[in-house]
Length: 338
Image 1 (cartoon, one colour):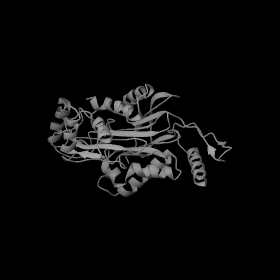
Image 2 (cartoon, helix red, strand yellow; image 1 turned 30 degrees about the vertical axis):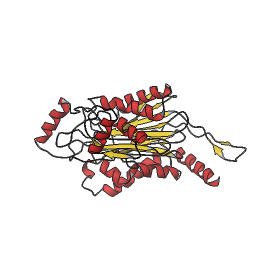
Image 3 (cartoon, one colour; image 1 turned 60 degrees about the vertical axis):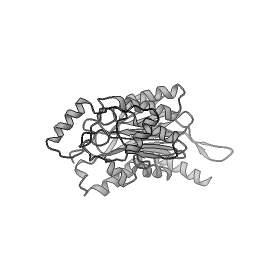
């Protein structure tokens, strides 16, 4: 019991220093007569997801959740919105291709029991989040890749189709004129969509889906489908997800480390900030630093949430009963001109 009491005290102290980006109204403490432990109410349900395209995804997820759907079903429904939108150039259909002109997709999903499903380097299937969910539900594995992921998707009844839109093909051909690879993240608010949820029962879940970095080498896989890098949750503690340059997130096991810091008593804001600082310190003399952007969102069991990024421009969508659906800007370490 003392460990639990210590955790609660640390969490309360961390919350007092949280920036305005955190949508948490504060802890209400009371003494539990039976256990002698401090208690505080949980804000639930709540859904947060990365970038502008997270808002319509949140809205659909919220609709499904309120209709009684399970957390994973709701996340899948929400993620399918940007996956099917050809104007979202970093997710699913219409996503920028690799340097060979092929759209390759990554996705993962995770529930409160730590069950996971993931696909990477998947081609020809519009909704990789749905395939990842089927991996969780219908296989003994966590991740399927490439041709094997496609074979599994087809066996599950998914339809193979061309995901390269005329707009993305035109941009790819223009890129071929110089063929210079330099990731540009969040300049047009284009990147991975990662989603975290605390449902009505107080259980956590999450998912990620992306078409990855534009003009990447054929076969490249980023952090998004990797449990512990692009997404991680522990239902006793909290959940975290990443966006930005996947290589930097993988090098630091970013999302898992954010959750681990929350386990140690840090607020979501402080945990996101500390891991972002860690990434900066490891990359400040790295060849990727010129264009490096990484952002995290985090959500703990009490409904406290936050976002933080290395560079400016990162925002995320939030949905709850108190304020409805909205966008919030994340705090950041540095602006793009530094």
